[in-house]
Structure formats: C-alpha cells, structure tokens
Amino acid sequence: MVPVEGEIVGYDPMFAVRRAAEAVAEAAKDVAGGHAAWDRPADAVNSLEQMERLTVALADLLRQQADALPGLTADPQAGDAAKLVSEAAATAAKLVEQIRKAGGTARSVR
Image (cartoon, rainbow, N blue to C red):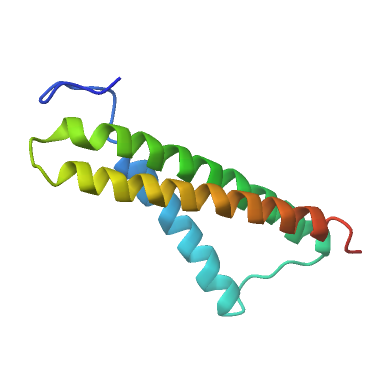
C-alpha cells in the first residue's frame, strides 16, 4: 500500500536503513583495520549467512521503494528513478544468489 501524500504511516524506514548501513560499515572498517577478525571458518560461514539475510532484505526494500517512488511525487522523473531503483533491486537479488553459492562452498571448508 502506497501512502497518500501527507498521510502518516508508521515510521520512516530511512532511520533503520541508516543504522544498518552504519553497523555494516563499522564492521568492514574494523576488519580492514585489524580490530576484528573471524576465528574459524564456521564464523565466516555464519557471517555469510547474515550478509545473505541483509542482502535479501535490501533487495526487498529496494523493490518496495521502486514501487512507492512514483506515488510520492508528481515529478516526471520519478518513473525513471523508480526504474533505476528496480534495477538495483535486481542486482541485489543476484548478489543474494552469489552469497548463497559462496556460503555453500565455505561450509565445506574446515
């Protein structure tokens, strides 16, 4: 359901997205800086499973945003923007599949 302009609906998901992005960026920085690391292959596999979960949610949210965008404004470029967001959703879905493959192979690592 796309809200009517000016209608209050729950909360703005941007804040949850921001928190998730900050957490992932911090983890990547910590690993790159040597402040965090995986201790065993199983830990890396568990991390891949969580990244898969994150990417599934990202693809879903991008699809929802693409659907909502044209209804948020009368701007004629909204349709073009929605198409690009939809393409980003498709790319995220491909990333989900790649992470699944990586996780499957990583599970056999001892």
